[in-house]
Length: 628
Image (cartoon, rainbow, N blue to C red; front, side, top):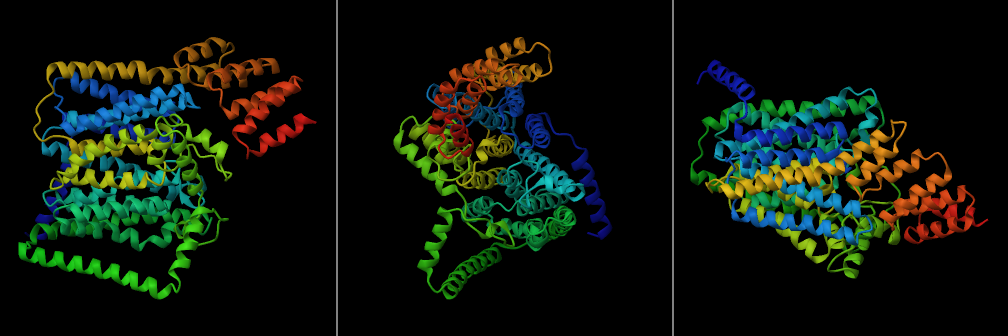
């Protein structure tokens, strides 16, 4: 084909890719993905329930419309099995409000699990043919790509790029570096799969290659060790199980080449606080994406023309396998040759993991293992051993860690999805989690010859591995793209339409969830916000308490708005009836009693606060002051 014809072809494909609207089947996926991207950008990946509950309401309403339209597909059996487990997990979290030290937290975890279930079902019920599923993968990748492009531009142009960084690591659009990295890397393997798919248009493959490189570049800028772990595990599983691994390997090399070559400028903000260095990191991420688009075009054009017979593919595959084995063997030889005492090295590494040392200067954040995760996991395992059947209750790890910690950190979660489930919900909770995610993943694993399933398998195995060492599950704007990919991988296979009775039941259940589960706590939050700007806040706070009787937010608002010390005491005593083990409430109640001259009551509540958080210096200082 002449070069001019190829150029015309590419131009037409680019126009059609941009101009062609999503079909009705893909609109629910597109709507939820786009709304999640907007919330991510505006709320910076907030984990506060009022910030993500609108996404849950949207997901429930989208499912209601799909089911009510009569176009909903019948879910495969494994999806129903996993969905039932997720529903039971949400219910078990809700039940644990009875013993959790944070009833509102347990309720929020139940709603989050329900949101993930709804997100999983949106593509399962709405996507029919193979074309719709492939296009849905591209839609989610494109949405993440747009978000990543805007992030890189913001970093490149920001007057104060330090606001987008935490310790020199990318901390935007999700204000937790490990979750920020995960948000983009979830799209990495789907982008690689689209790049590798020979049947896709040239422009589609090239843009996917650029998106994949952008995702990896932003992950490098975030410098998350959990991301490296997740990518390594998912790569081993993908290349070990996927058919057509040679094609996948070629696309992977293409996508990773530019970000790998740009590691130095991408990690430079960790070594320098200069504004120009941060700007250069943003431009470098964009340049890596642009270079990969150009290389992707050349690769896609060559791939269309190049035919490799089965014998040569087997020969190349064996050569690649031999190179991998040789590389592993060489790495082991180099390790034992350069480390004179491997046992001592292992002991020091374990000690570095167990005990967080002061931050040391280095070229990247990735060169040290020191953190407090060992202490987090120690407390989580102790709580699981103490409460093996019911756990400490949903979101109860925070209170347990305050009481038993040996570090100055106060993490909300245990930095491990599986230890969170085990410590907070016991063995039943962990089993429900494993079945809830494992059953759909097993279905996807049986379909690895299909590109949409391969994309879902890569994204899910990455997420599950990364979630073992970070608390990315708790960040909804990270979990939603993951469950969209997983749902896309589970969709289709000609299972037929939902029976009319099942469709009606689904529509009623989803609309009920939107109205009675997700909306009340969101409305309660709106009433609390209104109370701060009205001359008579009592009515708004009363509505908020009725709509959300588990939340402390209305009581904290009453405390802040109180005109006298006595009113502050009353507001905090009411809050304590809702959450008797809240260290914050006990501490502030002790201070409030001291402010009105009731020293004995002040000491009682400050001592209760110290018993629940012995290492907090502010509590110790307040006790010393009150004791004088």
